[in-house]
Image (cartoon, rainbow, N blue to C red; front, side, top):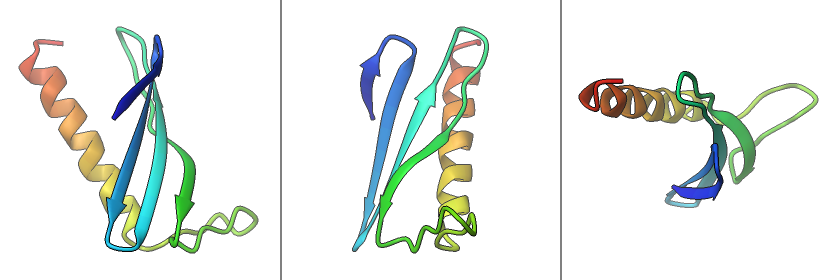
Length: 74
């Protein structure tokens, strides 16, 4: 994770030969996890398809964010 600018974080997952990059825009009340780029994940913008494991990785990221926000009392 790296802060790109106030209100936006960029996250990169490198796993074996795969790479997924997401942007996470956020405010004090909300956040989103948005696809930015990938390598070796068979992403097809026209068909809106990507490697079958991508969804699971994003779900785990979302769970981790929610867990930290809950622990912080947010």
